[in-house]
Length: 325
Ligand code: PBG
Image (cartoon, rainbow, N blue to C red):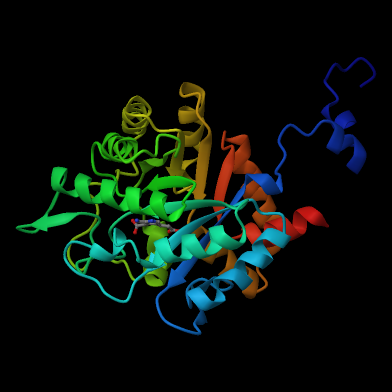
């Protein structure tokens, strides 16, 4: 044994302080983006049953929610609207008094420093639940682009700081950039859901946003989970069309894709830690099967290690609390 040669990796793991010195990846509160569901109506603050700890909030309760978020040190939210009225063309998405537009105005007037990201999609607003215009049972690409650009412009007009289109039509970044520029919003960045897979991990969100497709699925526009090269093609198009941030979604099962995208494109990369990923941990934690704090922090830091600069996560409030203590 005396002459045995080997490396002593454990030297750098000997104590908390030693481990902190050599830690390669850190999570900061500034990395976290909190998704907020705003709903039309009054006096509503109802917990989404498939997402414990996540609430639908009506406008009258939004500022209270925002106060909590800001006091925890979170710098940014992404807004999802749940409208009362739906129609085939998703008109409430681009209505100047739509729920996201109203919430944005309200929050901006009160807390201007909070960065508001507007999710730009049609599926919560269409009665068929698809992310675009339908004809003969098909989701039409090009006619949808115009509606998306209109939605983005009305969100920017209401005061949104960042536009985040999530619908996966081809050309959506180009169309939105063109629309924003034409309306004078040259300075509003686009955070593109560049790489969005057709995923079962969105299940609880669709309950929360009432946005399940009423027929078929989203596989003709969202990506096949089996594909990796395609993610690079999608990201490249969005970069060429003028995206300022790239999102990879979902996060946990797609850390390899995040690394691929980060290595190739020098833009801020955003992980979307989606609803199903949240709810699985919540359910297991409620049963006492996992340590919620430890498992959440481990998965968030793993996303950063994989290349994410920012993380959209329903755990943001909890994580911000844990980062303070
Ligand atoms: C669609 C959209 C989806 C999510 C955000 N925006 C999913 C979808 O139904 O395709 C999912 C977010 C989540 O699961 O947390 N506009």
